[in-house]
Each structure stands twice: as C-alpha cells, then as structure tokens.
Image (cartoon, rainbow, N blue to C red; front, top):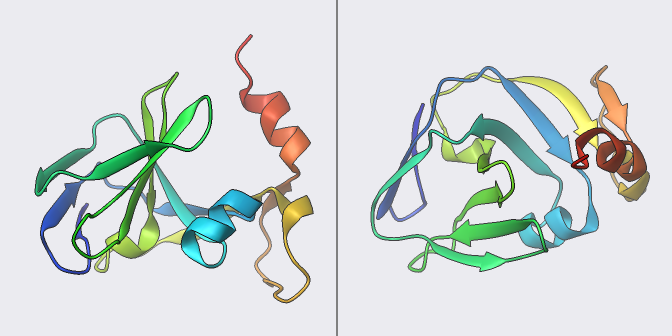
Length: 131
C-alpha cells in the first residue's frame, strides 16, 4: 500500500492489508478527533520524503505526524516494533472493518452498525500484555 500525508511531503509504504480496526480509546479520539481507523501493518513500514516527527505517548508506544501539515502518520508499539497506521493515509485501498477495541470508552454520540468483534480496554490489555 502507498499513501501520503495531506501536503505530500511524507510518503508511506506498507504491506497490503484488507482489514481495518477501530480504536475508541480516549487517547486515539483526542489524537484523531474521533475513533482511529487503524491498519495493523507490522514492522515493514517505510517513510520517505520529509522525516516524521515522533513523540512518546505512553511507556510502550510513540505517535508520529508530519511537521508541515500535521497529518497523523503512525502509532508505533515499541516492544514489538509494530506500526499501526491511519486508514485514511491510503486513499486507493479498499478495507473491511474487522474489529473495534476500547469499546467501553466509546462515547454515546456515535454508533456504528457493523457486526465486528468488540473488545473492552481490559480485554485488549489482557490479550496483548507481555508475559
């Protein structure tokens, strides 16, 4: 998959994916202005052009964006080196909604009618916590 930030100064290349997940956690909603439509791309993600700006958003992750236009580029899980990218970066890619996480933090002002797997924040941490 190939995508760009809004101004085009950063290009993103990632392996093809057909599924997108939604995160309703308060951090993702604050970061993106709504739920984050996320594509789990693993570690073979490449950025070219301008250098993304990254900051630590938790003990285990960093978030990145374009310094010129502010487009959100990635959520990077440091222990596994996994990149989770906003689906909106990939304008020519068709996705299917697969799951929703942090469903217990979803505000009442929107509701999705897709039939997906749904997990609470506790379930997410239990599934992905390092042993």
